[in-house]
Image (cartoon, rainbow, N blue to C red; front, side, top):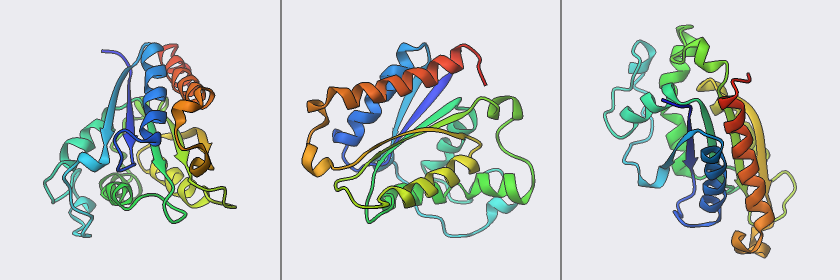
Length: 200
């Protein structure tokens, strides 16, 4: 089995600009020789974290829903791409609730000192953040980047690179900007190439 890169779509629009950006990046990773999988948060059935703290002592959550299988995917992935629009200077609520459910990983790594990701795997796990903002507003990506860096750290993924696109309210459709889609493709391809060539 080859290296697996997971693409996480945080946008509620399955065919919107954020999805196009993610698809281009995943195509690059696929062309580099990796296996890819796209997870659309909007299609998952899960509840927000209720702070039951079952995960304080166990390697899973007390709530049984779609997150149960997601945890295993995140333990086994080799690199991660997260694509999301900016909403109210942060990330969409559904994506934030998804990330909050990773208390399972947080408790293991920081409370028990036993990461759910083996060291031999975490050594090469890279994270790519693809962000889109409708307007050119100062500091528009700052909140989302802090959240993304924290999430990557919790799941043992290095914050490796980013592609941040602002002023989408003017651009409207990314298919009119093949240069931006190509930039996403190249970042995905480079991520895949580094994995295939075994470079940490």
